[in-house]
Length: 258
Ligand SMILES: NC(=O)c1ccc[n+]([C@@H]2O[C@H](COP(=O)([O-])OP(=O)(O)OC[C@H]3O[C@@H](n4cnc5c(N)ncnc54)[C@H](OP(=O)(O)O)[C@@H]3O)[C@@H](O)[C@H]2O)c1
Image (spheres, rainbow, N blue to C red):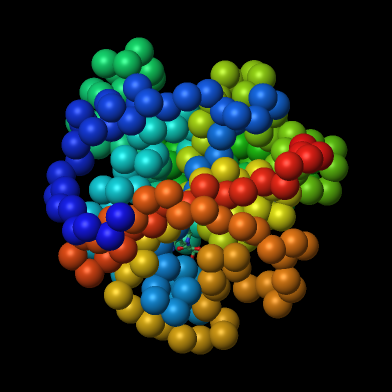
């Protein structure tokens, strides 16, 4: 641990190795969930204006692509989708590595939103690299349903809020998803964490400090403590340039209720 490694390219072969190593989820009822985030030295994941995150290096962006490429599905909250206007695709080299292993070129893209007012002009809907699935509620207005059905599969629950555990079960049972890459944001991450639904955290520490009580940390803006402290085990650490790439396994209590 701690040795500086340099890897400036999206390495198809390194992803291939990881794809080979990838096992099935240790939790039989749901996929294995890996969250990937970057934060400043003082723990901020964005500015208080929620501007798109651009405080990390090219290496970190490649790291995010590689993590995405390892998953069967990539999961994002509506606010991050809207703010960052991401497509959630992967570079051609990583698509090739996935194909070599009998996978689809890119992970399925999954959006969660309670209110469902998702703009179908967002960049994600302008590329068909992989199917898009939206988990939302019946609060989604009809005009949004019609527009979005042309671009995505909708799962609308009667409940007020989407049920994250149920979403993961559906992804596993109906879409054969074994690994999910969660790309935030902090509100979604915290909700998953509170329900014991995160298994691994990839965390990049970038050499900046933002300050600001109104800038979200990794677990968002909530003033509340988590229901129980979450124990993380550090399993890997890489230093590239001035950034530190950490990998944690999230410890789950022995007796799982989910
Ligand atoms: N530094 C990083 O690595 C990183 C990574 C990702 C994002 N970000 C930044 O984070 C900011 C956005 O994060 P955010 O925390 O405000 O929002 P978020 O987690 O991206 O999205 C929250 C939204 O997701 C929907 N949602 C549905 N069910 C939910 C549930 N159970 N829990 C949580 N959300 C649920 C809701 O959408 P509706 O409102 O439509 O109901 C909710 O408002 C952006 O500025 C982005 O740039 C940073």
